[in-house]
Image 1 (cartoon, rainbow, N blue to C red):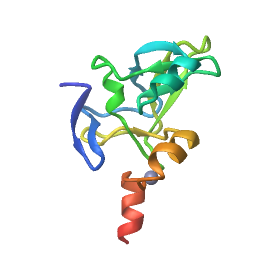
Image 2 (image 1 turned 120 degrees about the vertical axis):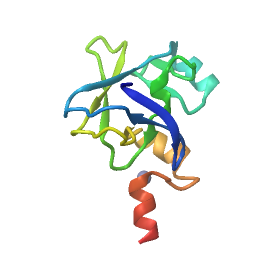
Image 3 (image 1 turned 180 degrees about the vertical axis):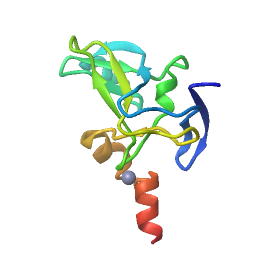
Image 4 (image 1 turned 45 degrees about the vertical axis):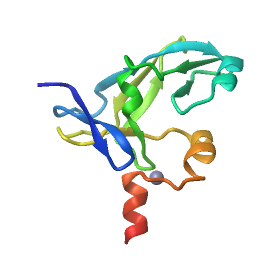
Length: 131
Ligand SMILES: [Zn+2]
């Protein structure tokens, strides 16, 4: 059994649980090239994960499976930085069943600049608007 599966979701490709996860369990590491804030500004893109004021992970590489995790306003996962602020791990915010899509909140800056102009397509917002 696989830990996770990449497949189509409401917002393009998404990452789905391949098995049950317990609350607080490690799901996946967000990996990529660690670049300076200035380089991040220059590159742009939606796979930038800010570590702190100085450093950002550019997670656009194919090896970074975590990049398939979509934003949700009501997520079931949360990202956490290691104490040295060099790595990011995604944890289960609650128990997650096999087949559920992993999501986390991308944060207010990302939401304002990238999601809001197009309208949020996360499952939580889609449900609200179709009600
Ligand atoms: Zn939303």
